[in-house]
Length: 256
Image (cartoon, rainbow, N blue to C red; front, side, top):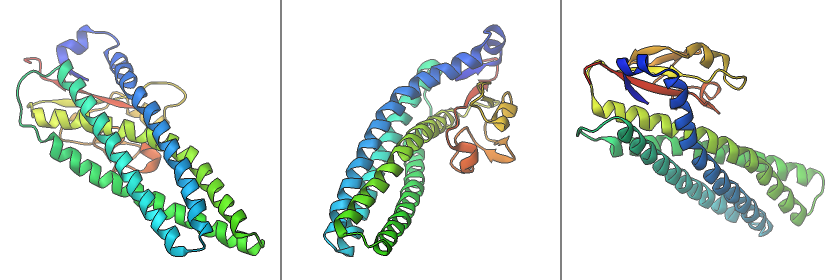
């Protein structure tokens, strides 16, 4: 992911190889956390069914809060494991000199922001969906037991989609963060970064167009009309970051 300009000229296909290297590193994490998240949502569904059948709104609210805290812990573990794997990859591939490492501070800020966004969004969406199921069940004259089953099935259905979405998007997002953070901490004058996209049918048109775009390290890419610091940048819209597969490479002056 880090090259000097001479290396880029010498090695054909370096961008594609770098993308595939990063994809190989991301893939086991995606698979691991898909399983973890899928299991989480299934357990979440069972807990919600039980909580509702107590006929206590307080118990239901307590269970929703407990599950939100559990999701935050899962995401924190995901972010940390992927971030440090990509930090080691970046340093092992290129950098050997010491540098002022603010990585942990940057990672903590990243985790606080992103876990907050995901947990709040899922909690809000889940509460709305469950409220709708409860209203429909009441109007249809369903029993408490049948309503509990309907709630469980709703959470399971949402969970399959969410487990895939979160594992794909967030593994990619934190990998992009780690690459950028290492480059920033190295603080090498003249470093530029380049957007790398695989040109296949799954890549967004705007991301294909962005392929090859170079900007100074401290600047943002402009992709689909939005400013992104790196592929998967959380300040980008969902339409520009969800299920993104792009990468960035960092190009240093020839003297390195």
